[in-house]
Amino acid sequence: MKLFVATAWLLGGFIMSNAQAEELTGTLKKIKESGVITLGVRDSSVPFSFIDDKQLYQGYSVELCKKIVSAVQKHLGLANLKTEFNPVTSASRLPLMANGTIDLECGSTTNNLERQKQVAFAPTMFLAAGRLMYKKSSGIHSLADLRGKTVVSTAGTANIKQLTIMNGEQNLGLNIVAAADHAEAFLMLDTGRATAFALDDILMASLAAGAKNPADYEMSREPLSLEPYGIMLRRDDVAFKKLVDATISTIYTSGEINGIYAKWFTSTIAPKGINLRFPVSPQLQVAFTKPTDSGDPAVYAEVPDAQKNLIKKK
Image (tube, rainbow, N blue to C red; front, side, top):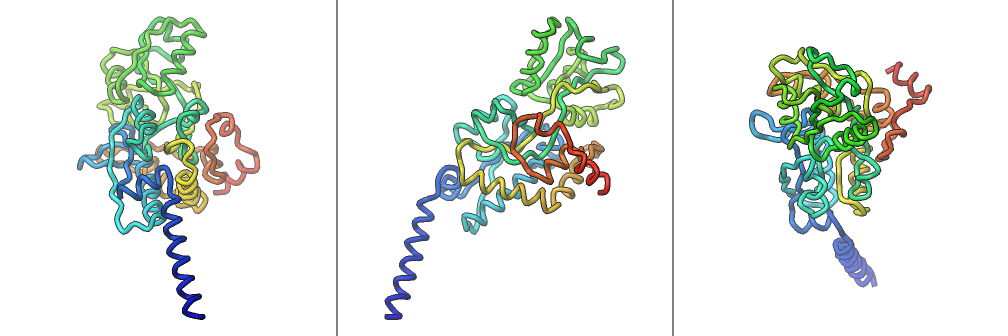
């Protein structure tokens, strides 16, 4: 009788294990069967995702994605999990996610309500402000000062779409140019082919910091938008998103994120030796305390008074 029970228990466990394996769907199933997870990465989105002097992909987003990779490997019980890096651009990242080429997008992608119709996002990892950058010698200080002038932004970004809308609404007559990537857009500003550059402040700050004369540039004080960044994954993949969200949320609420953030935003970054000196904002601190994947900027705009006092004490 005991032998029968033991045999039945083992058989039941075997069947359950097989059932669990068969129940894998979506991205987890794809990774389990292939033994490979593919990360979509950027070449010049400092400090989020970029190529270092050893031709390796590094950055804040890449480090967080690697944490997810470890969690996926453990969850699937894989002895080895190969990580492949697939370069993406602002224009190609959503299509490559949708068609299954990449499993996680580890860059500097804004999570907004429109994109949530196509893809999903992990809890917000950064809050940027869309701004204008121009040379101090240009005499430009605001969007209104750019009437009739050339403004560059990066193709496929939320910034260029917003700029196009504001151009029409305010009848500014801007000549809006779409660059292939952030580096090309900054080069246009640097060489005088564009009077201003529209992008998220942190990305433009990193580009200016690596320029020959960083002091030549400044950004508009008035933000054009608030941009929550998140690691992107496929939409309607419930099991994979649950694992990703749990991994990232634990990093945030445990305080592990503080060291990771400091490494990329308030410390010297190789190979150019720049320091962005970009501390955690009160709004982002709230998002770390209470993780959310909301794509509504209004969710992040206000910081409760109680939270402000908590942040001041830290």
